[in-house]
Image 1 (cartoon, rainbow, N blue to C red):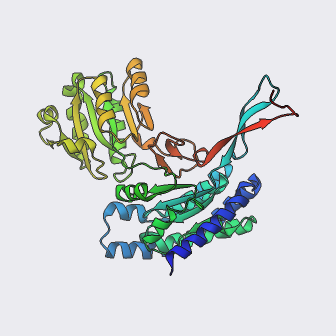
Image 2: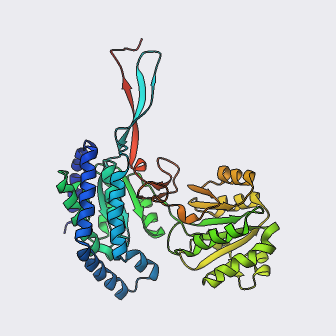
Length: 418
């Protein structure tokens, strides 16, 4: 295959399809989503068989447990894909929404209209569910999508892509509105991120190495996050039961996600009373502790943390633990070491909670809730295309609005500028 020629054709197809999608009615988009969901349910056996072949090959190639976990589909996850499509169909259509319309002294009315970005390129690793989620969100927001999955999920993703095409065709929309790249050649990624004439934005979903490569090579804007070093800070005014439950869920519900807690901070005034209990729970759940000197005095099982541990996204049964003086030191530590993804304060002190919300410079900042809530579905977006730690255009979980932009509109009645 001539990869460059192939990617150029994919790009041309996407650009043409994006124009049809921008004018597609809400009814047509919803009909496509519902038909996709029906196709996924009807072909669940094919999807699971394709996924089983992908998983078997991944295991034979020695992929790690976290990657296998993200790759694997079950009856439940196939049904979740179908439900996700139906949930996106039920969401309000953002395209064409007019806001902030104001009449000026000249007589004109000035406002903003929400419009699609155009063509969205999404590059992801072993996550078959992303194919359905990305297709749904790009379609509902009036965009065309070019999806490039990791080779580990190629069979399953092509099977899902067939369901997507079935849905698009059933609604009279171009099948090229969602294209899944058929080659595993890494050169395809290089071409995809360097086609500004065809691609308007790139969304990488995967490990730090992938995202660093995309950020370095891209000639189009990138919506991204590099790490998920999320913190739970247990304040001097924390409720002990809440702290235990929030920490347990944040760290141990799933180890390999970007919204899993990787760092625990404890206020010095409650460290003697709370640190042993919190750390005992983590140890009982098989989590290794890497602590500061004060932590190790309170919890002898903890090993010494290095400077690098404060920055680390482990994606494993490891957590860094530090005793801090107060909320001031907690905020300073987080703003220095966090990846600006998701950070939590556990406290019953309103002033400390409000300071934490204002001053922690992260995409999601929470009071008395698990970091695991940093997710498009949990935020009411229906699904997410990814999570952004950038500060422009989209920040945090990126749903339908994050896949649109706003343009200025002017409504007049023959006015001219004097």
